[in-house]
Every structure is written in structure tokens, then in C-alpha cells.
Image 1 (cartoon, rainbow, N blue to C red):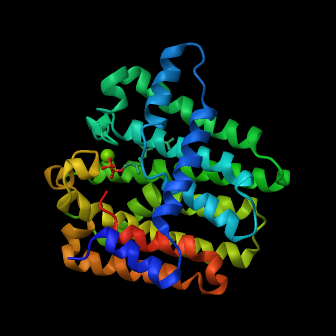
Image 2: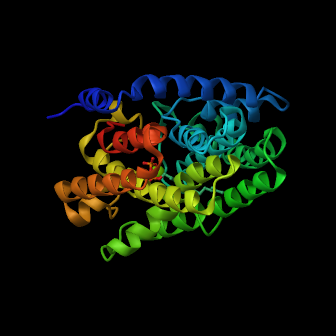
Length: 309
Ligand code: FPP
Ligand code: MG
């Protein structure tokens, strides 16, 4: 079986682009900025709870995509860093709420106890609310050297992405689907394009919008992001079956236990893997116009199907 590191090495050989170094360097930039973005204030307990989840590690895929697409269109890291942090704040708050007893009732996230297990349900709900509100404040007040119209567009897009037209809507259908045996591929795809895909697409587009992308660039990058978003979810479903709790940093095998419809439960493991690969190939094809400038986005797309967590 081909290992993730072998694939990363092959990728580097083919393009001269070293994804491992790139991801490590970007993660460091993002970790430092997230840490700086949210100092402890009063009351301390809520800031500690927000920081507990925000600084718990993770792949930082959304901020990395945002920075990469900004640079692809000719923008600078600085232009997109506040939006990148806001995306991670939103992603983190959605996971805090998703893990609550009223939703998925999970005990572990990113290799640590979930927020409500440490701080209690009441503070975990408020930490999620605090992070969501702060994400909007942060992008609106901290973004520099970008025309206000472009910042406003990103703020509006973030609002649409988290609301009933995006994450919230996807989560509602996800909760309603649990234990049902009549879930079709169309319903499952609706759930995932809203619950996961929407924020990944906005991550890519936010960076591009801040850098002043043309309508054609936006369309291409939207298609790229929609494809990697779906591939990402298919791989998530596969890993829930094939990976261990240590590899995932969260409980494994949950979908089967909760009788959740997933891509592997509808199509089987092998067909799911093939579908994810085809989506990644189609995503990469959208980047043909950009030459080596799009190496990071290409390598990230390929990484999605080879990751182990
Ligand atoms: C994880 O899915 C959960 C999400 C991707 C998002 C859930 C969205 C909400 C809770 C809505 C949040 C509210 C706002 C305002 C944005 P999963 O349970 O399939 O994956 P997991 O195994 O990582 O928990
Ligand atoms: Mg969950």
C-alpha cells in the first residue's frame, strides 16, 4: 500500500513543490496569528474556553486554502491573514457546537477532551457564540490594504456560509438523517455540500476576493473548491471506518454505530475511494490556467485523498 509520505515525495518529485514543508510553514504562521488574535480578557473563563479549542491544533486546512488562493491571484499573505483566522474561528465554533450532547455528544476532538467536557455545556455554547461573533469582528477590523468593498464581500459571504443556507442548514439535515435508512446520495450530497463544502469553498474564494480575483478566476476556484470539498467529506467517511482514534484525534467508527448514511455505506469503500480520486483530478484540472503558481492548491487537493486524519 502506498503511504502518505510516499505520495508527498512523489508529488514533490513531479513538481519540485514540497507540500510537507509548505504546510508546516503555513501552520506556524497561522498558529502564531491565532494565538495573537485572541488574548485572555475578562471574564477569563470564556476566553480560556475559546482559546482551548481555537489553539488545539488541527490541519488548519481552511486558513491555508485562503492564503494560497490569495497568493495565487497576486495578493499578499498579510491581506488574507485576518480572513484566514476568521475561517478557523468559524470552523472551530462549529465543531464545539457539533460535539455538544444535544448534537453528536462527542468526548474527543483534535486529540483532546471536547470543550464541553472541560468547561461544561453552558460555557461551550457561549465559547462557540463568542468565536463566531469575533470572526466577523476580526476580519472587518483587522484586514489591511484591501478595498472596503472586497472586505464587505468576504463578510457577507461568511454570513451566508455559516447560516441556514450553509453550515446550519447542512447540520439540521444531518441530525434529521441519523438512524434513517432511506437517505439517498442526493440527500447526503446536500448535507455535505452545506455542512463541509460551503466553508471550504468560502475559504478558497475569500482569499481570491481579497486579492481582487476576476469573475472567471472566481468561477474556476469555486469549481475547484466544490470538488475538493466533496472529496474531503468522502475521505472523512472512509477514515471513520479505516482509521484509529489515535490517527483521527477523535472517536473512530462513530458513523456505523450511529447508523449514519455515509458514502461508503451507500457505495462501498472502493467506489468511494475512486469517486474521491476522480473529484480531486477534476479539481486539479480547474487549475490548468495558472501553471506553477497553483502548485500549492494542486498539492493540497492531492493531499486530501491521501491523508490519514
Ligand atoms: C462536523 O461534522 C461538523 C461540522 C462540519 C459542522 C457542524 C455545524 C454546526 C454545528 C452548525 C454550527 C453553527 C454555526 C452558526 C456555524 P461530523 O459530525 O460529520 O464530523 P466529526 O466526526 O468531525 O464530528
Ligand atoms: Mg460530529
